[in-house]
Length: 199
Length: 199
DNA sequence: TACCTTTGCTTAACACTGTTAAATAAATTT
DNA sequence: AAATTTATTTAACAGTGTTAAGCAAAGGTA
Image (cartoon, rainbow over all chains, first blue to last red; front, side, top):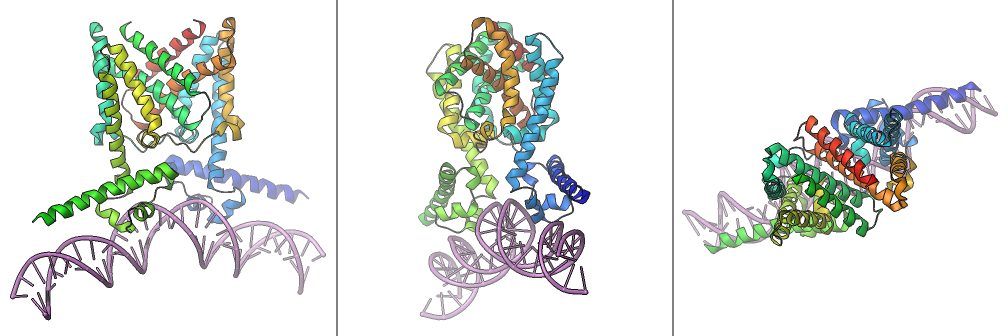
């Protein structure tokens, strides 16, 4: 009775096809464009049969998210094993994380919820630049003795912003550490960065 | 001919009503639940009249985004003016930014694209914890001489993650600074944080 | 006052979305 | 060859954003 196996193998295959098709669509048109009917088109079936492989659309996204985390974990493990000094290991791992985010952009978006649609927002909306401007003004003031270029100031701004936006993202999505601890992280990070402006 | 003015005033009023209604719905049910027909219900009209005030749904979101940036700018300006030392000003401004993100959560989500739906992802998906685990392992190793608590290590992890995820978010949404500069920021940030582990 | 035109608003419709139930075609078992 | 099970599709529902057509009330003009 090898036919049962063959059918099971075929079933597993279309399961994979669904995931692959989804990823293809996303790579071509973005997450917003992913629809059940489009997936069905790509695997040459009609939409309802997808529901024999996945409970719903979210289940597909969940499976892809899982795949993404496995990929990321593999990359980071590999990076780690190339070094022996812990400091080097951490750098390598975070660089791997960084690379993953851009080479598997779609996965990263799905995993951490970064939407790309608001590209060049500052260009069509000057208000988006105001917070930037009022902060860089002061950064400029602090760094004045070193005669920094516009890029230098910009870089410092984005470093600040990264830390804080990152922390906020974490706290909006997952609610793990307490508010007090987060405020401590924030304050020390800020003062640390500020001290580094004059150095 | 004051009637023309009255009518114009009424028009402006329902424009505001549309924005207010949208924000109310979002506060109650989240961004995902915002629909033209729901807005219309709330302002006691039918959906098509909204298109006499806004080109489409995105225009409404854009207007709210603008409002959000104005609110944020105001808060940060206020915070700045309460101090004279630049370092203090920066801390106050970023604290204002931080507070804004949580007191105007809906705005912040809209402005910076953080989706909240993936709450407690780690609980239903163990794979999401793997990157966390393999990094904290090494952090633990570095910090061993100081006998850190589990929370200490966790905090360090999230500090790393904030910087990097923040930088990535910036680079996925807006494409402003060059790759080389970003890599420099990343490397210096990482080595700085790593040095601070032993201190 | 009667007519015409403009305005404000609604109903109806189109093309989508995710999802489910019923109908049908194909394959397997009896 | 008939009955049953499995695979797949068609049709439908409720929702989405959006547009066009229709109606009803108000304004201006004769």
